[in-house]
Amino acid sequence: MTDPFEIVGKIHFIETIATGNGIREIRQLNKTYGRGRWRKRKGIAIVSFPDGRIHHVELHWYEAHGIGRKKLKIKRYLD
Image 1 (spheres, rainbow, N blue to C red):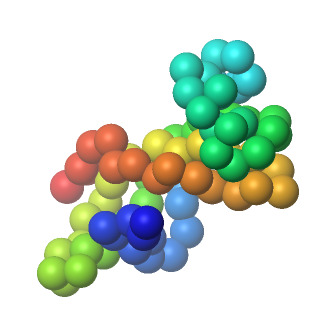
Image 2: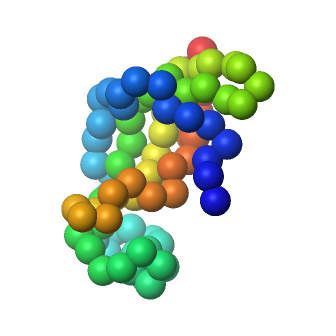
């Protein structure tokens, strides 16, 4: 499944908001994508939608070394 948006440029102001057992979905992440040192992260990015709209948004996602970013989600629009 692809995301219904595309990140334009880089994600800025990246912060880790949870790690390891502090992540509610840790079992599902390990089962779906493999065991890893999972982190829940957030950051600010510009995204483009298929209909041509462009917005600044706050993104949340899960990330593990060697596995990459998974389950990107727009949490709020900033403009």
